Length: 91
Image (cartoon, rainbow, N blue to C red):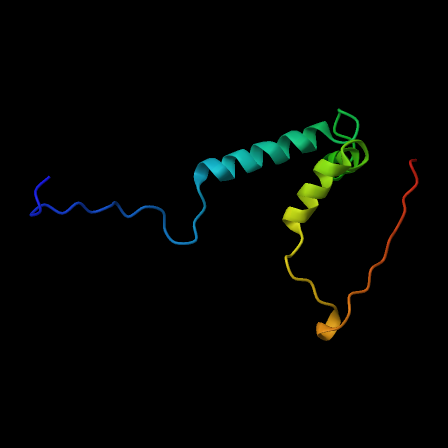
């Protein structure tokens, strides 16, 4: 290619916009999880699926949890963090 001719890239996606393929895949995954639910028939929708995943595949659930939690956590007014653990019955 000659030095006289300059190639310019297209405008690409606007800054801050998301890749359509990524958005479509995320929507499909969430829809499938909602449809499956806790019991394979949609019980408790997405929360039910997450509960099932937490019980049956805790390592996978912990990885997902790590993706949605903020990287730096501070308590109220930049103080200590208060941790509350709730246990739910299997019913």
